[in-house]
Length: 242
Image (cartoon, rainbow, N blue to C red):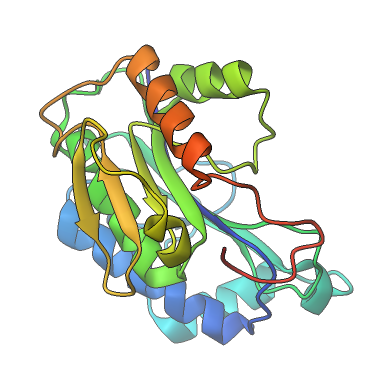
């Protein structure tokens, strides 16, 4: 069963629903450029049924949606949470989930793209291009760290290093913010690509041409952790990125 995720995490960064919507719209537009067959016809979060309302992405539409789905108290503190999903013919089931905007120094902000299927496998072009999805997330959200992983890889790394879900780690690809990138060692078995802000993506799949083993991914984590490039943000989160 296909179960691949791409995520980005960061610390405290206060933002309005409109500011979050601008980042989310840039993400959805970037996804569409990568694989239009997978990333179109977005539905509002509901029961994952065709009857769930469609949302045509735009900054105003996403702003309204974020505000409509977040009606509780203290949203400026705890942040805004919601998601969209898409399930197109012959493609994985996709979800785009966000939690962002709060002022609490104890809440992790995040964006995640998940791709799940019982019929599509990891040879699909959209999965091969998952490190490009990580690049889109890094550019749109200015994240502290992020990764591409499948479920077994996530569990293997978590178990080996006794990590919490929010702890920085390397999957089959990893994004490191500018200051993390400055101390990342060269020579890991993957391609190195810079983002416009100076962050770094290390792609152990080499553009989708290789399938790194759990052992290779764990060794990459060991190397990056030894260099200090995967140190956790301090709690309380007094900054967005390392």
